[in-house]
Image 1 (cartoon, rainbow, N blue to C red):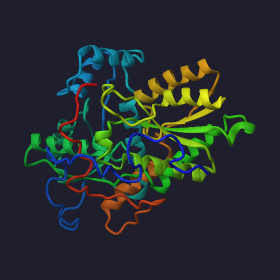
Image 2 (spheres, helix red, strand yellow):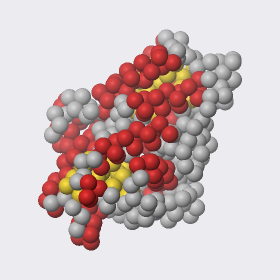
Image 3 (tube, rainbow, N blue to C red):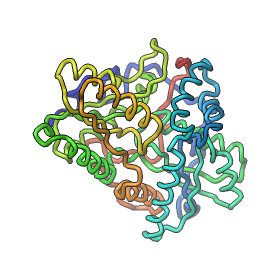
Image 4 (tube, rainbow, N blue to C red):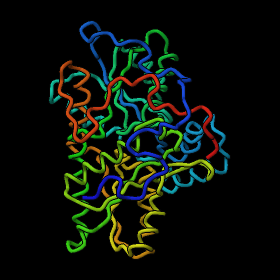
Length: 382
């Protein structure tokens, strides 16, 4: 089996720990929960909150959505219009909202099956339903304490802390009647998440001719982030651990971690290698004939998966004569849905088991004050 660091290394100086040489960062915005958590016996959890990125659901939504995403950032309008064309090529519809609806329905059914009778609310960062409106709805319904699930399995500023900041901002908008909100832990090494990903990889490898299957390279794909963000999180560590656990479960050897969808300026270092650049390198150096791409950094088929992998990477492979197989995202895989409810149940009922696989243990529930910070001196132009 290939060692988790056997592939080309990213720009992070040490994939086992956040960068010890990273410049210090301090919190600049409140992040939920903003007050100490009372015992469940005094204030039980009475609701569940799904928190996601959001996406347009029609051509007229695309520009307003992107303006929300880019608000406060020094991004030229021409760059925004270029990204808008990606969405318009799919009818102006991002699949992420519909995928959230499907996941919420599946989780609600699993909760009912287990006797967890809590309402599920849903709020997004960048498109309807937006978090402030959802928070107001929860307050109007008399909700006092909610447990949040973020649609991201890996720790970094944009995948965790920023959502906590979004929640805190929504609570401030609503005022004193806003419910207390805490979150579940990251599930990157939960046995059921690994089981769901393992099933997806097995199905992908089955599409490779048997005589080439064991030597086919698997590229595990995740959204690239700036090194300045990665330096203050365990994003790359968790991705590598997850990939290692999946390949160990399948019994597959050759794999690497690659990144996609970077949007920063050339002078700003982001995690590498880029997926298409790595495919080019493998074709040149090893004359590869088959490749499997596993988008483990995405829980469902986001626009980045549909465009950057199914369009750009697939086109490159056709050009090079490489058999391209793109693995499924976990979506509403039964093991993944069951894991989501496991994570919720850990917080709803004290003393619930917290299973994990691998070397890093169960991730924390309550984030430390300096968790996943992103230095305020970061560049903002894409």
